[in-house]
Length: 92
Image (cartoon, rainbow, N blue to C red):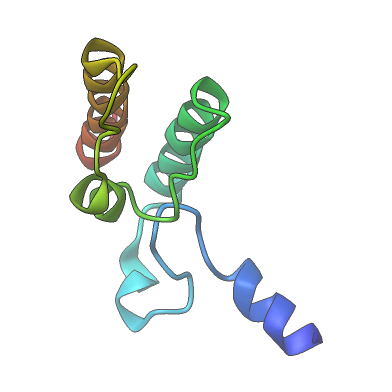
């Protein structure tokens, strides 16, 4: 159990693993920024399960259909997620 927790703690919520070999030159400031953006998004959308990777979420997202589906609200939701993803990619 302890080893599993240690492995999970090594995971960042935006889809990168702290224990990868390519992470040696990662900028801690940009990692902190990505964590803040993801936290802001989770706060803005508390009822949504965004997963660990916003790109993956956007790829697999299917808008609700049927009576009562609000396409305008759905597009606003997707735009919010896309903007957060772009902010993380840009680093500001």
